[in-house]
Every structure is written in structure tokens, then in C-alpha cells.
Image: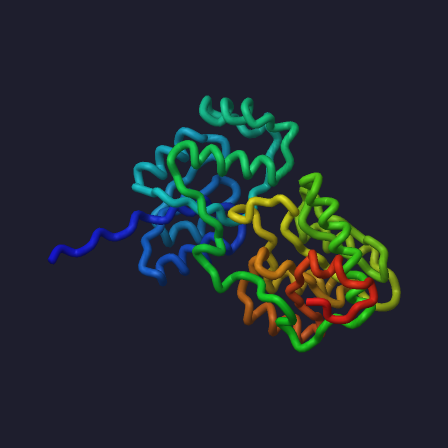
Length: 290
């Protein structure tokens, strides 16, 4: 009896951070081959070199599609952060220039632009899947990951943070904010979470520390740009004087979960998976609403 054909390689469009490698490891553990399309100036060369790959400029659309087709890729997952450059520095090829003209680059926020890119890949015949479909154990669970849990004051800050981040998300700006004692110390925009935490550290008040709230945007395509936390988030959060992290359960990814929990427990921080809709339904002083 002839052997069944092996599935086509999974295409990983690789940006910054460890997520592309995590997805590649998970896919291989499932018996699937991978092909990594590494974005120049974004992906980590040391990570990429361990896998079949090709490098491509961010706006070299024709080359990107050609590399994926040449590797017999049919399914694509986007993984890792991408610093959004100016249109002038992009030097788009004809394929990318036509896409940007159609999408309206200047008018689009990050999520809108990424959603347009996903739609374009699908028009070209690729199936785009979410990172959590490859690495399901990476999803943030509901409830506490840590020994420490939020108290009533922390829940009030979490509720305020949910209100703020959902407002940011509705206008496609960011996925996070820091709230301390009801005061919004910092919100996330193009600079990212690390820079936001550094700014929050310079603005912290005396008394109980702040809370980082990380959520997906209300209308976000959950196949792309999921909120992500990891051990480095804990280290930076501790340096910023935080009491803990409230992260959307089921719609966020947790990198190096065991290391994150160890770091949070050692620092006395909580990490809690929340349901934003339920948070907003509860009374402001409610305890443990998830």
C-alpha cells in the first residue's frame, strides 16, 4: 500500500521575537515540515538559519509569493512583531505598491493593514491560519497562573484598563495600557509594550502598583497580531512597579509559560486570564469576576 503524501509545508512569515521559532517547533512536533519566510530587518537570523527559509523585504510582494509557492506552501501563519516603516523607506515593488494603493496605507491602522494583507494572501490562494491553531498550548487560560491573585483594588484598575484598551482598539491604536490607582499611566501605540512599560515606570505613583492590561482589539482578526506576554514582560513590569498583568484569556499568547510563572511568583506579581466582557458586566468593586 503506498504511503500517504506528507502535508504541504506550513509557511511561517517571520517577524521579530521568539514566536516564529515556537511555531516552527510545534509544527515539527506534529510531524509537519515548515518553510520560513523571514522579513529582512525584523526576523532573527540566528533563529531563521535552523529552518528552510528565504529572506524577503517587507514590501517585496512578488518575491514573497514566489518563495512561498516555490516551497509548495498552501497554509500560512504570521508570527512575530513588525516595526511599521514609513512608506518612503518601504521601496515597494509593483505588486506591493498596487496593494498599498488599494488598501490606503496612510488611512489604515495596524490591525486594518494586517487584515488587508491576510485578505490579499487569501486572494492569491493561500489559507491563513492563526498562531494558536499551530501552538494551541500557547493560549492564555482563564484565571490565575500565579500564586498571587488580584485584590479588590487591582480589580478596579483592571476594569478601568479594559475600558481604556477597548476604546483604543475600536480606533485600531493599541492592545494595552497601564493603570495605577485608577490613573491611566500609559497606553500602547506604535512604540509597543516594552516602551509603554518604560514610560509607565517614569510616571508611577506612591502606593499600590499598577496593572498591565493586554487585550485583543474588539474587531480584531484573531489569526494575526495576537497580544503576547512572556518572561520579559514580567521583568519589565516588575521594573515599572506593577502589581500584575491581566491578559485576555483565549485571545492572547503566553511565551515560555513556566519561566513566566516562575518570574512572576518570584517578583510577587499576578498574571490573570480575564474575560473583558464579563469584567465590564460586573460591579466595579466585584471580586474575582472570571
